[in-house]
Length: 399
Ligand code: SF4
Image 1 (cartoon, rainbow, N blue to C red):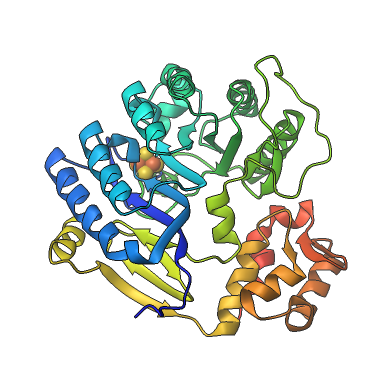
Image 2 (cartoon, helix red, strand yellow):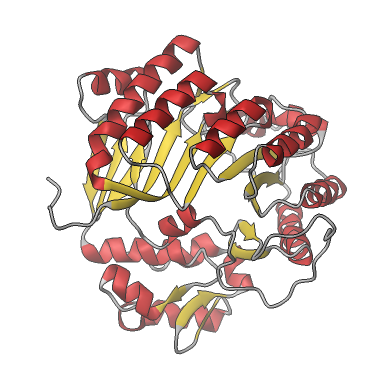
């Protein structure tokens, strides 16, 4: 039961598990699906929203996937009307993930009219051959067209997702993709190295020896990413995330990198909440939520998800409550992904533990190694440490 005195949760993630086609590298829970299952999902999601609405006052909302933009206008209207009726509109930041092939001006306008104010567009590459290699359904031209459509629809906060170290991608191609993507002038850019997840076609091709992984090239591409984004006025605030601190005018194609703010104005507030150990509800098949120390994961099965909700039951597969020290260790590890690291006082407020006493040994080791630095206010990873952030952060985990 929710304690009556607990303030409502201020962050909401909704998973839309449908895509037009499954990409070669994708290990997210998503499926290419029929209109009928999508309709059933929308009905179930509405029931799930109703079940948690009394404990929600969203400051940030993120519809991810999958491909949320695959839902049609009518399905979006149903979801948004429900949220309006339940008083869930008005989030400070509300993001919808889009595939460039499924953006339309009508949808963009409907979203803007209901308070959605940020779009995250999965571009991945601007090279036709690589888009094909990845199994993406969109063309490079659709990226430019959809970006213009989103701007015309009123979106002035757009993220672009790119991938690097794609098999067959050379440094020349990566530089050109970065140049073209940054020329769009988006407020935010996320970029991840390709990951070879088991049970994906790309992993099977790697196992079959169809291509090799060039780790040095991947490192060089990452360095290129960090340098080029900085030269275009996007400040890195997390290993893979870069944002502007102010909106640029159309004429400003290049900005020099001034003093980077710790967390730039266009950073994803929703993701910062994750990295800072905040609570959030996770709705939809396979979604994970974290509310007041309890992690709950929904079934990764759309039909089962619908069946549960049709009985007005949450579709939760598992719940886990970590002991406070383990939870604090995880929170430390997540937060160190950010360039700002952890301000000691903020960490103490969030977790009840003090990094300076409970993780002094780990912080010293990382500092001596050149991966971390501490001052009176905070502990943070150095640029060298950020390259190996997963290894560095793992030091903070406590079982
Ligand atoms: S669009 Fe995204 S979620 Fe869908 S298959 Fe491709 S990578 Fe996976």
